[in-house]
Image (tube, rainbow, N blue to C red; front, side, top):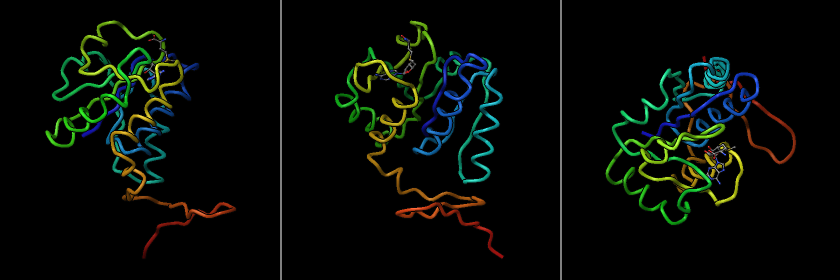
Length: 177
Ligand code: SAM
């Protein structure tokens, strides 16, 4: 299992970012996302997209994001520009997740992340050591973790499916009688 935990959410200001953490986690192969309990609107949007475009993908609220980290039965990756270089630790993380079957919790922040999180994580990982965004960091990390296989996945229980095309937009209904 791969779960993504969003730490911190400023209502209003972080609405799109938190939603995009959820949508990116879903699109790029994570199994579920955990959002702070003041991010109910983002949860609704992610659940709505999952209903329409398919899953399986879970979205939950938590009143104790740091409790989730402390009690996680598996390994914890915290994405941070201050961390070890993703290209140096990805094999080790993949081995723990793939070969040992350890559930993986991928933690991304919003504003300042408490120092405890750096200590509790099994790996602090930088996707470059430059400041950018939790959405970008998450996307690159998941793609490295899954080595691109997430791009091939099938979606279950979708109402609609996009037909890839060179030009134009086509969406097909998946209703089958
Ligand atoms: N300045 C904040 C701090 O020191 O904790 C981080 C703010 S940043 C806008 C929000 C989140 O984006 C971070 O918590 C981290 O998860 C992610 N992030 C930003 N740059 C990153 C990088 N180079 N590698 C990995 N994650 C990154």
